[in-house]
Length: 517
Image (cartoon, rainbow, N blue to C red; front, side, top):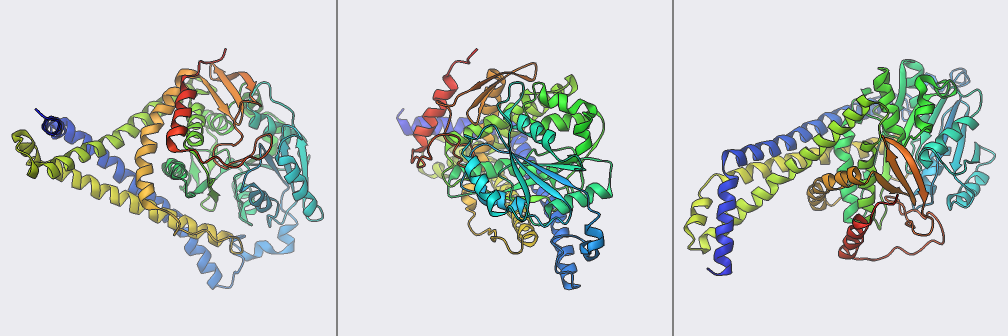
């Protein structure tokens, strides 16, 4: 038996197995996942589109500032002077290609009430320090902004440490505190919209939003985009949600001053993930998390995002499932871990099966192998066609939601840089869907086994769901963070032009490194 005949036999055997009742069930499962995502994205687009229609209707009625508020009377001086004070706390680490524009969008908010901006960093040696000083000096006569040096964290993640120090330094009259990541590009009316919702419904515990990833030319940026798209479903409800994104969180300042529900203690004493910790506390005490439909923020991804940085980002995302506050929180995280891993591979398995059926159909006219000809006559090709149709529906729904969110972002920032859908490569999106779902269970298992992660040059180790050890890797840590290509320390190096293969080798080498005690 020559090589081609052996391949024909293998293809025939696989096609026969994939056409069995179990194989058909796997196909149905994959198609169901595709259609569920498509329906979810269609609903999310409907919610966002309602906001667009309302804004355009108000503009036609003469309300030219509908991107700032719903009611034009809210712009009257009498209404503006009664607005509550907001403290905006921005924990910083490094300086990247998009940070300056993001920071400028944050401090030039058109919120009519008193607002202060606290840029919190671990030390003045952070590359962000000089850029922030220059930015503050440019706007010193127009905004209340200051730099806060937090020092190094010892009991929790550096981000949480920076946030808590920022809360300690916020103005005593602040009613609300808004936590923003440095990759959030605010709209002029974002702070006002979030504050208005908090004033309208005092029962809201936390308000949040979600980023709209804008992929660069890098394929791995499309994998990040694809990873976030299913997550975005939980933030497009138009109101109540169970999900929380740490990049944008508005809370009552007194909840921190009074350590309500022990949230400060939970964050400070071993906290790794701010959003997972606060979401667990909200669930435990049945408090409301809200995500207004206007809280969607353009998030340009780094132009040189490599496989290694993508791998590290996924590791950081899956690692949060290993942290927990209570036993119930542990159970929920473990269930999410198992369900996500199962659905990821259940999603991609039918594509391998469909590829096999298509290969059998293409090969059968050119072979004398009887079993292969019999396999080509089975229902395999029909199943592959059904999967292709479901995939197209999924991609169309993803495209439509992205288009709607881009339109909404452009309406919310009418004088800002225009966000465009034309730069998206949808062939790369399809490939990224498969790669990302294949990679997620691998990184999740890696996080489960090691119980440690390198986040921006800091090694965190967990014990019983809490940070137990912090090791700073200034000399051996990466020069760039995972998504924004930030400089973390030292001189700004030119982005390397390493191949996919070399990046993969470095990631595998990192996998094989023994865990440091």
